[in-house]
Length: 262
Image (cartoon, rainbow, N blue to C red):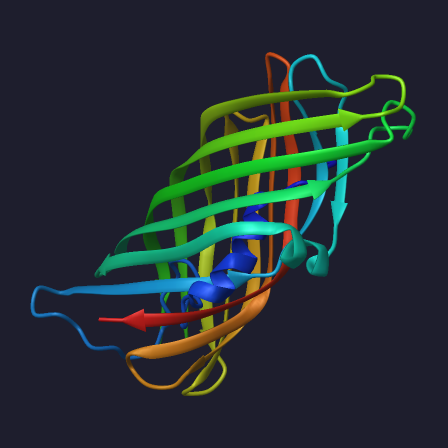
């Protein structure tokens, strides 16, 4: 996975302006702590979050050379046009349904493989991903919970590459793709104290893309039965290539969120 161009990371930055993520579970993992149960047995949570992710990878549109992108956290904040990120889940006994949505639009500069094709390379990218999955708790005690999960992630990626100077002259192209990947993995939580817990997940799969993976490790703090906060590190990668369009990126960096349960 060799990529420097990830909008999801961008979405992270934008979410910083929207709000944060899951408290006892950042995405859809529910912390193994007592919580209010609805009369019908269902519990729900909503988690907007802020992901300051750097981007590494490559992108290509039909008719133009591959463009390499490498951005750190501060670059993402500077180049981000707009982003939104949020997760949520619904749980009944050992069963759960969860979702994670990310949208980001960024404009940045990049480089061609040997830097001789063009003097300047500008990239504008719009990325949207939506994950819908189901989970089943295979282990649970007063301190820990472990779920096995499976789901589908929908991707929309649109890239505009503009080259100027160098061997290729001035040219601009736009291309886009839509695809769905199946993913599976685990997620869980472990309570260190009544208010502090560890949380994380790992998922991997493919389908439209050759590879689609997502991992997170974090620590959470429970303010009360309704509100929690989580801080951690997340990495998400996707390698998609079809008909002259390439989107091969890894987004990774610190993530912060607030989880609201009801």
